[in-house]
Structure formats: structure tokens, C-alpha cells
Image 1: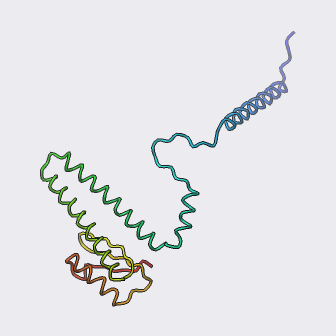
Image 2: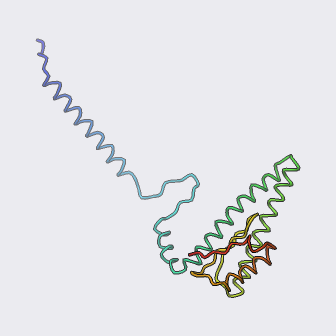
Image 3: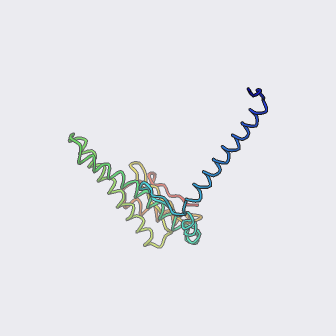
Length: 180
């Protein structure tokens, strides 16, 4: 005998099938999460940072925030310039065009000269018991950021004199600004 077609049978089979699928997905998820450990997975060479350790170091460094920020700015500027020097070295080594090699060599020397002059100006400012400073020299200007809330004319004049002597640039090419 043939069974009679009923919509109830289809609905009940669908519910059983849905419940079975839900049970399988739940079981698979449970199995996967229980097999995971707390270990850090192997990575592709990028540097991993422990955010808790970084947060603790930032809290401790809060007392010396002005010195730290100048040091961070110097480090970032040096890193960028070192990348540029590396690129110029690569150009010097790999280029077949003599004019391109000469231009890269000249640019590299200019960057190195700027870096030396910046450090010299910062050292002279520090040796005169003036506030800590951060110096950036470009082709067109000298920018000096000073770690002092309000700059008086005497301090600005001393810093400007040091920068003018070291860079042989006029006062209108020198910008002195407060960090604050």
C-alpha cells in the first residue's frame, strides 16, 4: 500500500533535518574552540607587539613626555632619512646612468650634512642651557621646535644666532616655535 502524501511529514522531516544541522555545527564549533591553545601562532615575520607592555611603558614615560616626544621625533626622522639613504645607495650601486649616480650621491651627501648640522645645533642649544630643541633642516628653511611654553625674545635671539652661524642662512629662513 502506498502512503498518503502529507505536508505534516515534510514539515517534521525539515525540522528534524534543521535540528540535526544545528547540532553538527554546534559540535564542530565546540571541537574547534576546545582544541585551540593560548599560544601565539607562527607569523610571517612582522613584529608582534604586546599591547599591555606598551601601555605600561607609556604610563611610566608620562613623566618625561617632553623629552620622550623629541626623542621619538628624532628617531622617526632618522628612520625616514635612513630609508632614503638606503634607496639612494641602491640607486648608486645599480644605476648604469652616471648622471643619476652623481645626483643620488649628491643627495645622499646633502642629507648626511643636514643630519650632522641638526645635531650640532641641538648640542649647541643644550650647551648654552637653553630649552631642549628639535631641529629640522630642509633646502629652503630651518625649523626649530623648542620645549618651552612661552619663548622670550632673548631665548629666540640666542637660538636664532646659533642656527644662523651653523647653517649660514639668514634669519628669515629660520623658524623657531614652541612645542606647546
